[in-house]
Structure formats: structure tokens, C-alpha cells
Image (cartoon, rainbow, N blue to C red; front, side, top):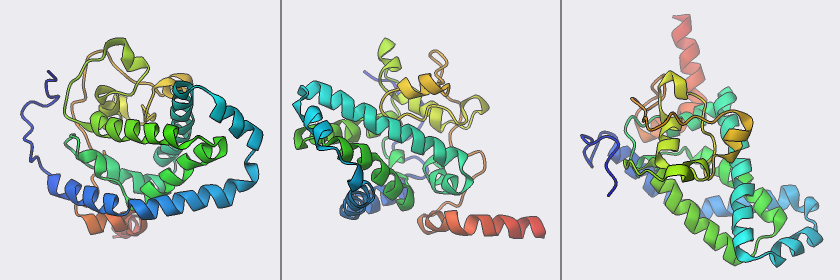
Length: 242
């Protein structure tokens, strides 16, 4: 039903063990991420809670609340994701996620623990301030979990005009591409609307990227990548001074 983007790519492609390690570690640490992100939203932004606003949000129909939480989370995702690309220190964390040279459902798990903490903490802020009820949060978590796997997958699904409303595999593959035309594009995680609004949208017809990964390769094992944001700049200065 869904032809592969790279038909010759094996299931156990290069780097799958590293990505499986990230998958395992990041999922085991979900409790830590939840505690940190919840405390950050509550402690740093508790003063900004407006009960009247939260009551209005709770009174909305379920489908409207779901669409609102997707838009609110994706706006924060757009801002933070763009910062990861434009602020050198933050990029060194995010470069880990862009380092896979083969895209499939597992490659999306390659995320530096620091980035996971920062992203989840900031995304929870609008969710906390708007006071979405539990059913809306559960629906959002299911949607995000499925979409995050799907957009990294090695499948060439064509959704037609929906590609302008929902982030698809083709859309996110272009974000991971190392092609010059694709650099620093397609920051949105759920819907392309904010990329369209801020001029970072890139979806060239039916074409797919030719290559993936960072323009400048980063170290290849888990420990080296965990330390990369901190020792990477030191190593670069030493190399330049030789």
C-alpha cells in the first residue's frame, strides 16, 4: 500500500542498533521527563494561570479542544525547533537527531536527552496554562505518538492536499535532508501552518530528498553523542589550533 522511499534500504539498516539504544533509554526515562516538564511549567508559569480562561477551554467541544492543543503545542514546537537550528549551542543537542543517514520509524528516537527535556518542558507550558482536561491530553498523546513514528518512517504515503494541513513523511523527510535546498526548513511537528506563515515551508512537489544526515558528521556512538554538545566545541578549537 505504501511504497518505501528508499526501496533498497534494509530493515536492519546502518545505525539501527544506535537508534534502538536511544529508543530504549528515552522510553525508560519517560518518568523523569514528565516530572521535570511538569515542575517547570508549574513553578515557572504558575503565576500566569487564569482560571476563567481554563474554564472556557474546558467548556469547548472535544474536537475543538483537540485542535487547539495541537496548534498550541505546535506553535511552541516551531519556536523551539527553529531555535535548535539557529542557536549554535542548542544545535549541538539537536544535531544528534539529524545525524541518522537513513530514515525509518526507529531513527526518530535518536534524540539527545537534553533536547527531550527542553522540548517537553516548553511544550507543556501552553497545555498547563490553558488547562486542557485529561481526555484531551490523552488524545493528543496518542496523536503525537503515532505521528512521530510515521513522519520518520521509510514509507512514501501520498495524502494529497492534506499535506498542507498535516505534517507527513515527505514533509518531515525534507527537514532531515542534507540537500542544500532543505536546510533549516519545515520546523513544524504536527501541521505545516506555522512554516507557511513564517516562510520556512518546503515541499517540492512529489520529490523526495537525495541524502539525509548532518552536513558535518558528528560522533557515532551513544556516549560520544551524549557528550557532543559540551566537548564538540572544545574539539573543534583544538583542531583549528593544530
